[in-house]
Length: 102
Image (tube, rainbow, N blue to C red; front, top):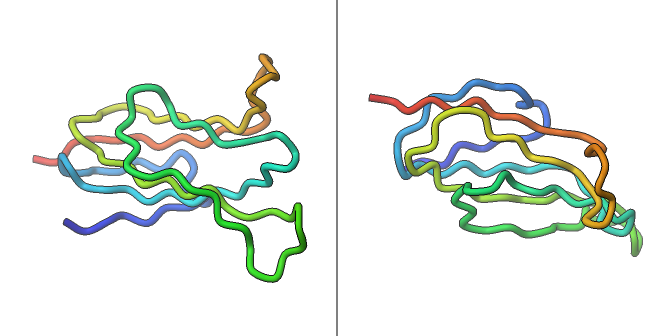
């Protein structure tokens, strides 16, 4: 099944997906600041990796790449850019609105 490629420009996008279809989400991140993207609880995360930007010096930014299995997910998926020790409101959020096809 084809993967759907997404990035920060797709924030608040509504998608119709088939069960088992994979979403690949790329979000800018710089873990040296302490901030990391967190997926919502209960989402089928197949892969989660950080990729530094090419040509960036040590400590420079990159992107967090999530591969998600849609399963029978319907509704909003809200990712949060937060510090694990912060406890307050997230620095940023990213939301996808999923609807099942068929």
